[in-house]
Length: 117
Length: 109
Image (cartoon, rainbow over all chains, first blue to last red; front, side, top):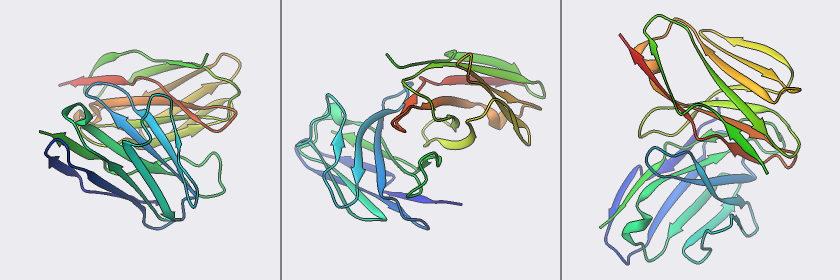
């Protein structure tokens, strides 16, 4: 089945530094990938929709300059948390669906646990 | 507005059956998903319904009634490993997923 790889799984960084998270679709092409954030005991919150070759679409309230998204190829999207602060500590999850299949289920990466000290 | 409702928490006994309900209100509808999420992990896909009726996959079944805006996930022969959160998500007319807050299922021996 479709596999989405997300790296790193865990990262601890100091306040003020930047962190890059990679999301790769391993055996399928994904024109669109999605980035979610999840706080403990809460559901997924969509941050942005990443479109290959174009600018990402951010959800209301998500800072574009803080969460930089690059979808350079059909199999790779990256999320960079710039100038991270402790309140950015969260579980970040990417997902992708099969290109051209609008009701295809999302396949999720394993998530990245970010801790900012 | 768009909304997904599901119970916050449910408790069931190992070996029993449990039904997790989900009601939705969306702008248009293109199907409903159920995902399982264990604590600290990403969600995994369980089922997708777009037509009315029951879809069975082993111990898990999912039901949809489009006229009622209602779905349920049925888990049979419960095992301890089924303890997880179960997320209901509806696909709206723009093929955007609207997520429920999840139902935490606790399985007791």
